[in-house]
Length: 105
Image (cartoon, rainbow, N blue to C red; front, side, top):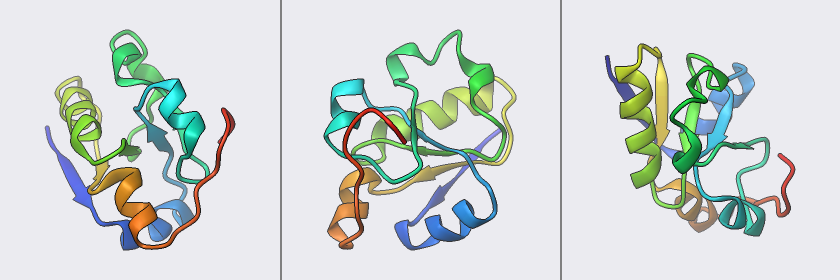
């Protein structure tokens, strides 16, 4: 099983298609700013909560490192069609895209 890397400019199409956005950063990082619509499920809590991540989800972190680890782990658990946002939240910001602050998607 595997996952696909996704560029920031491809994320809008994934959202329109109904993909779940899962931010795997810690809650304090998430609250400081996240991609609109992303739900927080920290990498540190992922084991045991795999069922909360639907197939086809886009995984997001700060830079793409932790989200790629999460995607690889979930793919090994049998999840399919996962995507990893390359560049993460920082890449999203560098493109001038908006972030949402607080603990809500």
